[in-house]
Length: 368
Image (cartoon, rainbow, N blue to C red):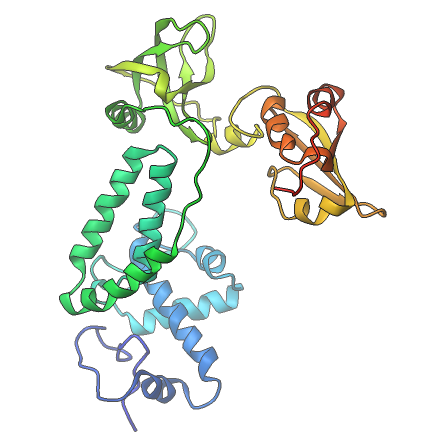
């Protein structure tokens, strides 16, 4: 009988790095630990155990049973079994004292470091994300990801790097990015970096902002909350001004300079950037309104694949057409998008949006 060993090379009841693996294959070790039947299912359980261990080490505040349920899509009893399995195989696992009734557990930092490796697919995904940021004119984040990628490659053992690099090159050659038409105005990276520092420090900022219509540059005192990225890139900030005193959008290319103040601000606890962004069909902010679009039967299947807005409700009609109802702001951005559908879509309501779109309904040869 071979000593029971998990797929990750951990002897049950021992420190995960205190032993050498035998000459047996992973499959043989797995079979010995789990039995001969249902190997695929048991391997998946071992894979989940390793993933749980990584999550337990990454979570500084620990994981609760509810966290395990949500992360792995399992029920309470399965979550308890997974926790117990982790405790058996990683005796370093500790309960976190949070002062709350909910119990949480974690693994000390460094427990799994030798088990962590990076695949070609993961490195390729990081490189693809870097290219996406570059394409979308988000050079500061692209630079951060590029630095992260370089650090991860530096951590690879030479023999692992030699094995991964050919696959990584092949994956990168297979990934293409479609060009995104539209403006790519220059954004001062130093401005973005300073704004990020102000966001983290909750520090007020004086910005020199150029009005796109009047071309005048005025000074604004703002409380920076975050950024919104789309066809243009914006700073989301509270505009401190007697005539404003509200959250507003400031186009990053129009910020011609800034001055960090030492004056702190208290972020509005009721403000959510995610909810703020979800109010609009795109980026422009105004009062949300209800709108209904009707897609022709021959375009309904294509339209049904789209997520136009988180609030959307789709209703297929007896004649094969599709009604899409949503609640959002920015009729102009809606009109821009609906133009791409040409005569395959009709705005049922409101009348104002219907008037904007009706004259622009072109008979395109294909749907978006």
